[in-house]
Amino acid sequence: MLASLLDFTPAEMAALLLSLKVAFWCTVAICVPGVAVAWLLARKSFVGKSLLNSLVHLPLVLPPVVPGFLLLILLGNQGLIGKWLHQAFGITLAFTWVGAVVASAVMAFPLMVRAVRLAISQVDSGLEAAAQSLGANPLRVFFTVTLPLAVPGILTGLMLAFSRSLGEFGATITFVGNIAGETRTLPLAIFTYTQIPGGDAPAMRLVILSLLLAFGALMLSETLERRAARLLAGNGGHDRY
Image (cartoon, rainbow, N blue to C red; front, side, top):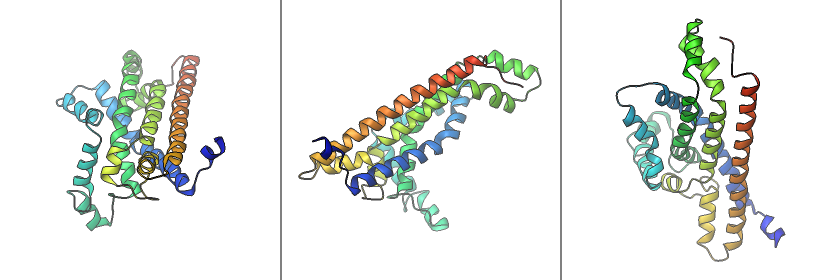
């Protein structure tokens, strides 16, 4: 029984590798903008801040197929932006693995922002003010004080985004479809196997694999966060200005 559960077929391995690739590039894509938006929401007051905050977190409360459909309208080959990308640069996002990265990024971005925003909010603003009083410009203050002290939250946000991407289904299937070898990630493969006769065994294998990946990502996030916190505690949280 155990051997059959671990006997992955080439199609199942392809779904696994595609999911890991999509999750990796999704995490890379939202890292910098996620930190930037989180800092903006945590540290600045401006007209439209509430609107920006609502837009960022909208994917968390919408049915996932809604962002997927909106992406199709905007970025499809006949979409408002996608048509121009296709005609001007030959770039196609809909029904490709790159489009799956975009869909995952849209759904994972709010989790990244929430984790990083909380971390930045907990950074003592007095330390930033002290750095500025010693002559550091705002950019240097961010990179030498704010960012290092927010590292645990940033790591948490990245791992949450990675895990969310691994489990993304609704926006992905709506925007890029369920194409074997191209857009069929683990959740889509599980759905496919549940719809065909004799698909229970491969579906169960992929479910177990998904659980292990998600559990491993959360454990890694916890470990990295603790190590970063200990490192910051060890040096007193201070950097040279």
